[in-house]
Amino acid sequence: MIISYFAWLKEKTGKSTETLNNHSINDISKLVEYLSKKYPKLKKYLQEKDLIRFAVNSEYVTKNKKLKNEDEIGIFPPVSGG
Image: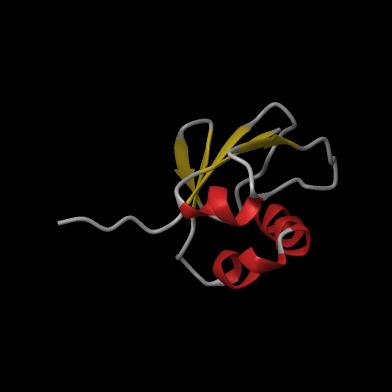
């Protein structure tokens, strides 16, 4: 699966995209666990309810969304504007 990070999440991870080939990551909750361990600076943001939004194949999803290896996942921080 291809993970894309947006806004300040790019700075926290040091990358805008990465490819994961981990078959044990089969839903968004498992992805959150994995990324929280890989990027400790993101843990508090990823695990806070409804702070970070996830999109799978360009559609926003909940954390129980099942994942496939060919999915493209976007991870978005809160958006503010005026």
